[in-house]
Image (cartoon, rainbow, N blue to C red; front, top):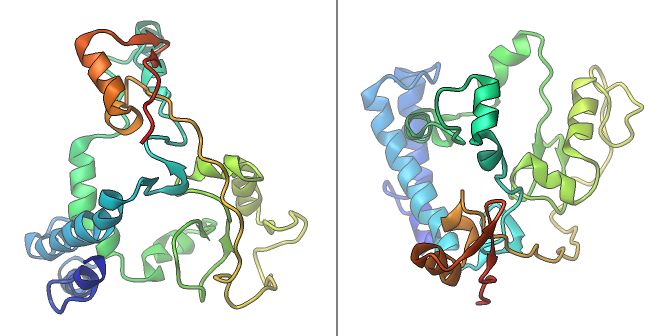
Length: 255
């Protein structure tokens, strides 16, 4: 089903992305997101590509969509910042008048509906950043990507940058090397001018044993994604034992 929704003429993900990008090239070349005639096909592309094509995986798999080494409801990294920043003393120290949330739903809706992935046409989207003299380091983790423009690929990692902490050099170390103009492999070579790494034309044949999944942690600020049905029920009926925003009883049920 996912393949059909990807390749179906006119209504499939691939053709909808093409329609979005063609409209954007004419009506919104700067990807501002304020042209309704452009936003409409881009919203359609996001709906099918994320909701249906990618959604087919999340519907039938027990694996986390962004880190396939994790079995649901395990997540990484945990969103412990919710609890920390929403403590009264922290908000008072920061002078924050409202509760902390991970994102603004209006921003998310605009991002997915207008200027998100379907509208991005090619590497020219980074042109203004590069022309400003800023350093850009591109890396790819779990997704199957085009290899032609590949700069670096981190194995045994998930979608979020902090996932790199689970499998080797800390994410900040990689970031620090890249921003300092050094090669990620050794940290000794100048990578800003004529540097060119050596390696195979494709790494799709390289495999490794997946790490063990982390144990699930039911976190009350992220119940739907981190808790099993028995824990959600216990929270609803008041029988759950919670310590530091984590449900310690009942334990996560298997399966």
